[in-house]
Image (cartoon, rainbow, N blue to C red):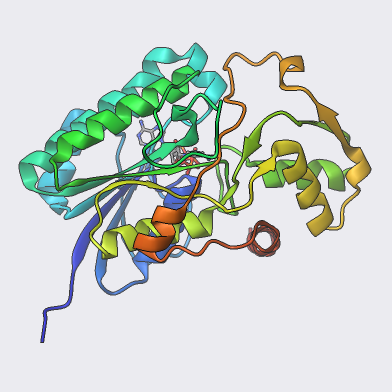
Length: 311
Ligand SMILES: NC(=O)c1ccc[n+]([C@@H]2O[C@H](COP(=O)([O-])OP(=O)(O)OC[C@H]3O[C@@H](n4cnc5c(N)ncnc54)[C@H](OP(=O)(O)O)[C@@H]3O)[C@@H](O)[C@H]2O)c1
């Protein structure tokens, strides 16, 4: 009989949206020994059966200590500076977190033989001809996109057999005490309060439910895959259509959603117009089956209500 697979998994950015979901998912699976890490001294989430340690990924000495103490088999890097406009104005910090820190993680993986799973983004593409396959040519139009592309390139430094990149798109989901909201919550909260919102009609995405994304990451680890995978929902929608779908699904007043042209917003960072992913590779190699977007929205709001009651 073959030995059970037992993986020591280090998760960075565990207080973020994906990080929390991954900790909840993998923390309860007996084949994994999970160490969750985040910038805060204490975890921002409750429950979960795993350890937690404070870790700022821009601190190379702290990373070395974690590798020495915990000896991970796999590192999943969910930590990132994700606010696209802030990345444009705080370029040095953005580069340190999204690029240089990945180089440090990859170097430690290379020397210890650990695998690195780097989470990346559709913003590595220019958005001229989405939805994209994994082999499409990146050409970022924002500083965030450039820093994440550099992060991808650094991740490969973990070693030929030891790196994997999961790119994802417009992630939504419920989690505890997040530092930033997400699109579904924003649409729901505004419409519930009877407020009008302007939402772009000329940007297209394949929105991703975080529960599906976390499941894809776990499958990638379980099936010992390497290389690049595109992981998102299957529904290709303009962001305005996505807002209407949210309103419809949650039975909110759609007339409060006003159409807007991306050029009417004065945002520091340029957004790629048409991204979104073709997820055939993830479906074939990982057995990835994402929720339909409407079902994901319902599930997310059920979880959001449960978390708000619990708080
Ligand atoms: N959200 C999306 O729409 C989206 C779309 C495409 C790709 N992605 C990618 O998906 C991944 C996960 O993002 P997410 O949605 O979970 O975003 P998130 O909720 O913003 O989580 C990112 C986490 O990284 C942490 N972090 C930032 N700097 C750090 C540092 N120096 N050391 C340690 N942790 C640090 C943040 O800490 P604090 O909580 O303390 O701020 C946060 O908890 C990222 O790689 C992102 O680029 C996200």
